[in-house]
Length: 156
Image (cartoon, rainbow, N blue to C red; front, side, top):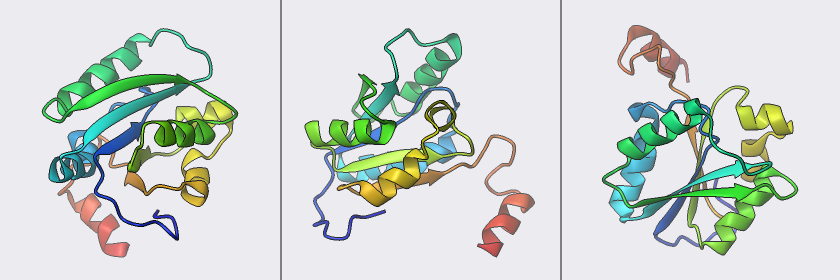
C-alpha cells in the first residue's frame, strides 16, 4: 500500500514489524532482503509489546533465526511499548526513526491480532503515511516450486 500523496524517497530505513511468535522462512523474507540490499537500507526489526517482558524461548529462537537470515544486511532490533494500538505504535515508531518503508508478514490469525483484536495490516494500509510492504505467508509445508504452489499462483 502506498499513501495517495506519497512522494517517492529512496528508503534508507525499513521497519519490519514482528511479534517473534512465528518462524519466518527465507522465501518469506526474500522480498524484504532484496529491497534492503538494492537500496542499501538498514532493517529495523520492531517488536511491539503490551507490557515489556522477556521473550519466550520460541520468540528468542525465532529472533535468532531472523537475525541469522538477515545477518549480511545492517539491522537493529527494537522493542517498544504499545501505545493505544499496535498500528498507532508502529506509525509513531516510523515517524520518530524516519522509516521510509514498513514491512509486515500477513498471516492468518497472527498473535498480535488475537491479543489486540486489531487487524493491524488493514489499519496500517488505510492510515499509514509511508509505503507498506505486506509479505504473503508462504508457509513451511509447501516448497515454492511445488505443484500446489503453482496451482495457487495460476488462479491469482
